[in-house]
Length: 396
Image 1 (cartoon, rainbow, N blue to C red):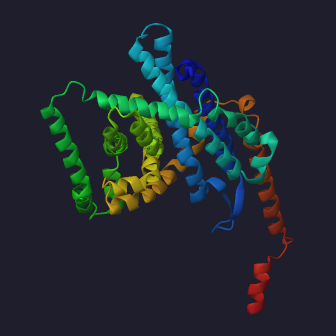
Image 2: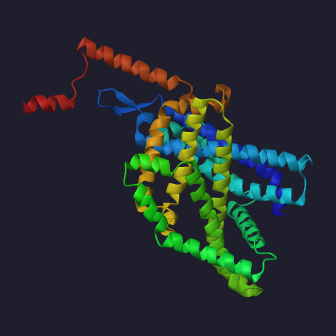
């Protein structure tokens, strides 16, 4: 029954991706124009120059890019199956699994992004004319229809377990024993701190440089992929004692259901990272490739940061490198700041698509007019005396 809804999930995934893009177009445009609080030079600071504001919006921008690239690959798979060019039972199963993995992530992300974009725009974001409130209300149902998100991820989790079990089909006892030894060796390798020790040796130099070298493309992929593999293997191991005992099987499955859904979510995130990386590799222009690589790194590292406890518990990261992940994310946000408008303009939304006054340029005009007014007032000597100035003079 769930498989028949795959066509609808293509539309929901795409709509959620582009709704996130629209919300970020509005919020980031507004944040480059709206000024708040005096800076060190006495001038009010543009919102997007604040580190916290960058942290709120840029990781979500990176995720939106990843989801759009994944959606493009999803569309190609969909076209191949429904045009008949690649319409085999395996291709249909892959398409259903891909739909069940991507639709939950993009729809949840859309709600989160639109909410954060609304808050990042302050009271102006809450005004209905600026669209963020309405967009979020429209997309709220997306997490439920065409398949509840948690149910869909459970479908993905079961497919992951099935594929994992296929590795052992037809294997003799010697092959299974060899695999078991390998799994044990892997767990000992991570659990005994051997990989942590290696990272610590590398990290004795400059932390900022070593973490960048140690968390580039290959390491990001390894961390994200190993997390999925380890989670699926652990769940499969806990389910194995049930054998053909359906009652025990149902009990064990229920006990591991939450972790299975989390493994499926990790699998979807890995697919998005891989789609983003494939897109980066297709770019020829050196400057564009550099910026997109930073954005892809931001996406990968914020996933690692989100699951940092898992990577530490399972010995995949040293404590030193784990502590440096957040600082590296902050540096990436600062690097991406000059390109923020270019990145949202690349979504190619025209004014008739945006239709949000705070993203129309009106805010910049208002801010410029106010600054000119107060500058002229100060030059004339008629500007009001600040309370701080009065207190300083009184102390003298």
